[in-house]
Length: 340
Image (cartoon, rainbow, N blue to C red; front, side, top):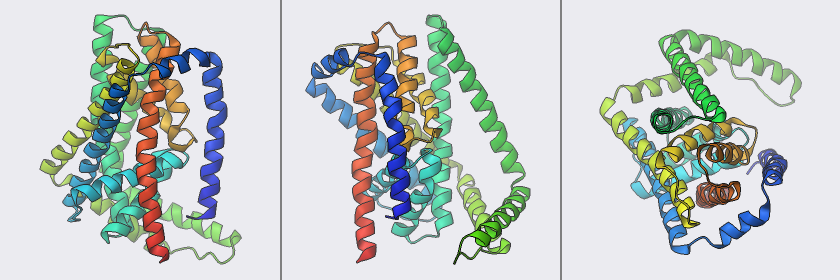
């Protein structure tokens, strides 16, 4: 792996230290450890299985998108491939935005496709994942608002959710309808930027604007190819929705493991909203996602803070480390194979 990338990853993990320190400064660590010690092992095993179910569901969403692009990937290999993609998101700053280039490389390397095809495939999966997350979060917070009263934090979360939905849907619609213009402007801007970089960086040769535009056009064309298959899009959306439900089930089971029960509607909206913290300059949003998740769950339930933190530690520990360990092994194997 490139040394500069390793340095960025290590720096990102260093940034998580004060975030977690701040979180545990507000919550006494001893009750959290006591709650973790009393967690039932059999239920923890179910949390692990549910976590693997989430990985499998989203890997099949990726496989469905790749099949739309005439890229054949087996069911087992798609699982390892998506685990590698999640690993890259988990160890690079800014989560998915930082990990997508590595993910695109993994796809192109293992399937023999162009890099732009791999990038379009994983970008399509990320876009599809947003749809059920927004729907589930809206349904969950609406149900909670009807049955109970929203606290000030949850009202803010609801407004934030609506605002993000409007911005993303509106922005996505604008970019899609004016994609030809966007292609020209992005290629011109990228060429100008790279020309300036080439003036300062020795032995760096900037690609031509035409070359950049050709790559962007291929990327957009691949997205169009995915959008032209509504049946497979629906199947991919189904797998995506199943993945979110597996995540919600894993968090619910994490509470159950330590002898506490929470409303499923609460975890249904808390997980997608907390995922917004993944855009922070932390590897995989580590620290940021946990903090937001604890704040939301503490506001939406009557469960004491130590129990909430313990459940989040179990949930996020498995959601983060299971794909990181599997995906890291996949990336290491591919790197070793390339070196050989």
